[in-house]
Length: 220
Image (tube, rainbow, N blue to C red):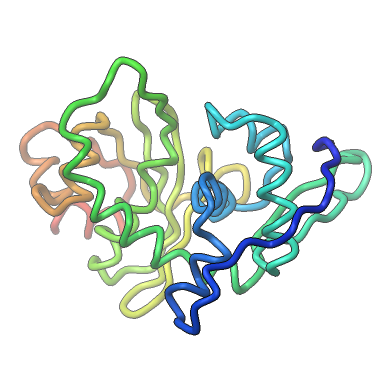
């Protein structure tokens, strides 16, 4: 359960501009990273705190409260036996997926060298990789295994909206394919410097599966 906080006056740029209005809602530090976490699905407060290293409990609670107020997230109680609350994005909150994707693409060149102080989670690679795989034009679910952990990507074919989740798809369904690679290779694929098929031929990526999605990943 997040700590209570006293209500504060909402800050605003007070500009009649769509960009300014957007920043009124998501411009505070940590807000878009909370969105990034919730794009993977509903999360408990403790899970959010664990995957946002560096955020204080007070700030996290404050941001979530603000995001509820702005209709970006909702909070609901899980049915027994879980007896826990989770936060999840509203439709308006999920609409920030392209924004996060564009920020990830713009920020990718800054990842040339991993700093000793950098935290890392496997699912942080999901959004840029998902955007790179959308061009395959095939429906299906692919499990992605990195040294740092595992996530899954759900592709919707040409023109569809992809989604992703933390951990393997086996928790919520069955994956159609599985790929294994290291983080540097994942970044190369996400940035367009390397296709999955090229990574397979070069021995940097392993693809498992027999269906259309696995074949597309191999470039067959």
